[in-house]
Image (cartoon, rainbow, N blue to C red; front, top):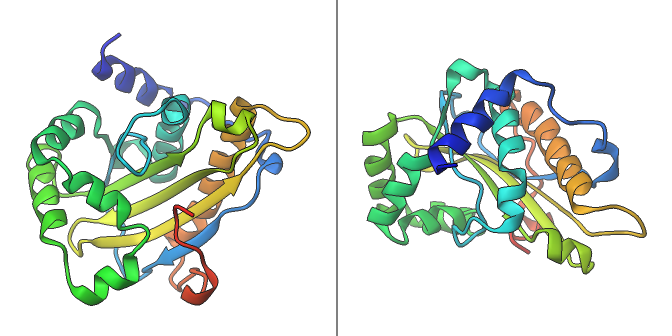
Length: 220
């Protein structure tokens, strides 16, 4: 099955029920960044990757469920699966995509320094293919092997505003295997809990972010 076919199939599942029965198994996410004054618009759903832009086993295992959740959150008519268009632009723009991913960690510092030209160039290139809409990210650090060995795994959600060239909001959730559990159930629960909070953040008119001094960088 081609990449385009996988994206089409996953997106078609939006009408089915989002998996939530294991949501109590995972920890609750933190809101590590929030700009409630930025407006909601249509979103382009970016491929699920790690912070280096790699489609790891952990990323691939939750991609279809992430697509369903984004579409369920914004409504099918308001989401555009990025899929092949994003991969094409990523090949053309090199490390610019990774710079956007890594800006999750240095948001305050980068905003003080002004807008990144690399991010602006990436958004311009992608918008020419998909339209100038906000970008919806699901970032996974770790996967089945790391979870099985007891390492901490993380799931991050974020909306990147392509007009303001900054994040509208970012959530972070981390967890690790206890006495029981498996990756499939745990990752589904982590994703469900993350989207439960994301829905509230996306509608909130006041900031839900933790104070900057109280939060860890997103990838730690």
